[in-house]
Length: 83
Image (cartoon, rainbow, N blue to C red; front, side):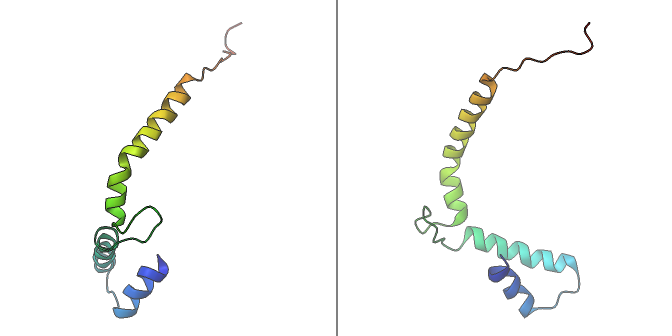
């Protein structure tokens, strides 16, 4: 993020408040994630946000599988207060 955002934002403007800085960072981040195409292996020229939205169902399915696996594990607890 430093090369893509930090160097660009801070070399063009001196900020007088954190609020002003936050506005510009939010704008840059929104543009970075929602407007520009991404060159990642599985993005196929889509924006990062579109790639995320398109693959959200896959992540959901994987999480459901993990939850089922985790709940299938049973634990035997020993209550030390019982004599």
